[in-house]
Image (cartoon, rainbow, N blue to C red; front, side, top):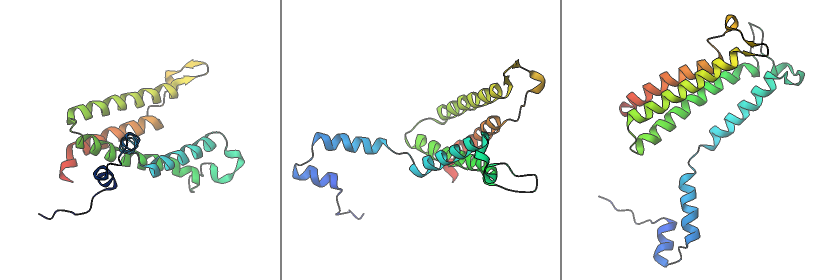
Length: 164
């Protein structure tokens, strides 16, 4: 086996006796901060565009949904969210599996999140200013679709991640 002669900055500082408690705190914070900043930035951009689309878009044509035979910026928001859901599933499941969390525990978390998303979506679709009108209930709402996709893809990732 080949042993690397390179040491990290932390190891070098420890050997020289220059490692301080503040360095320890900073190292712990760096280890905790494992979020993918590009995904968070993309999510923020998509949410900003979604807010503009849902509230008139300031009258800009590219922030309105296109007619049946067209495509505008507004029409990309849902596919972007689905892409982000897929990326997040892989990152989350892989991280939990590396930590040694049982697949059944991960699956339980997935099911809880699915139910929460589905119920919130159903409530938002039926909560009208005049009260709940079940005749106008829209089962395949946006959050319900995201919840269903999240459930199916998460179960597949949990079950088949070891084969990929």
